[in-house]
Amino acid sequence: MNRGLPRAVMLLLVLGGCGSEEPAGPGPSSPAASVNGAAPPAAGQEHTRGPVVVVDREGRPLANMLPIATETPNAFETPRVQGALTGANGASELALPRDVHLYVRAWDPAMRMFPNNFYEVLPPTGAAAETMTITMVEGARLAMTLLNAAQEPAADENVGLMMFHGVHGAWWPGEGDTDAQGRVVFERVPPGEYTIKVKALASGQLEIGGVILPPGGETDLGPVTLQ
Image (cartoon, rainbow, N blue to C red; front, top):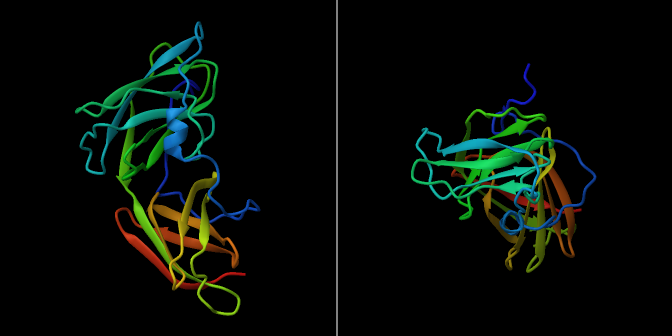
């Protein structure tokens, strides 16, 4: 097998619950901030052309998507490389360092869509890379009503969220605030099946496995009790 060829990895079909000792919370900087901080390839560093096409679930090209490459597959790491926004044909490209193990996917600056797959690119890459097609899916909405140990609403509290991928571990951070009834909504999160951790500022935390978030849909976990 040519280890330089990119290998596609599907996400929605392999997402699943996994345990972790990492605390729930907002986690690292948001993907939007991380993308803005991406650095271009170092001067003189050997790189290869990595063509990328970004499409929706029906295979239609998507404009204004940002191709990125990171050194781990999780969804919030600061990119090592980023390309130009895709055009009307969904196409762009990355200048991939030839000596670095990278994961290629796309990022929607509007945070409406999330990648359903990424490509693992192993060094050394060849002189010509194959086109990597990234499929984007609609984000999901996650809601729940948080209760403290006394079964009272965890009202007006800041809540941290961390979503864990069944294979790749910590995957997506979020943050929200409960209302007077303890309800909190995370408006845009990646679809799939996850273990999630939530942590309220004063009322405690909770881990829930097997949470399914449908693309473009909403999952309401109802009342959950923090410990």
